[in-house]
Length: 193
Image (tube, rainbow, N blue to C red; front, side):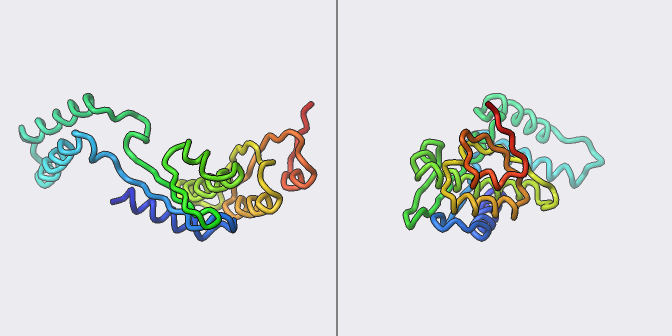
């Protein structure tokens, strides 16, 4: 299905674009959860009626078409599907961090997956892939806020900015007590007292 195809494409792009030695084999699995809802059968039934009606579009839809459409509306009202994508798609990230496989399904899993710096890098790598999937025009500069950049090692900071340049992403960060080594990566710096 389309959702799992997107997940495979993201995983391929993500694994070939970053150079963080501690992170390897980042896999993303996207699964549609629409099948878990009772509405799925009603949607399938309506789709069949719609396909049949498209063959004879010059006629008004028949009674079965209308009934199936009304049933979909009723089912949507009764379903627990909301406007949040969480209700329709489940995402699992599997990373190999320093040789250890770490599955991530929840925010809590991510927080406990690794050090703060490596967890942050894993999220950034995944977001880079997703961002360029959604905005494939490399000429468009994306602007991201990033908190606590100072928690990254010097080596990973260099690799992060190389990755951001590769994806044409500009970071803006707030960092108390930023070091001169960190400041050199920013064209614009504002010091607040």
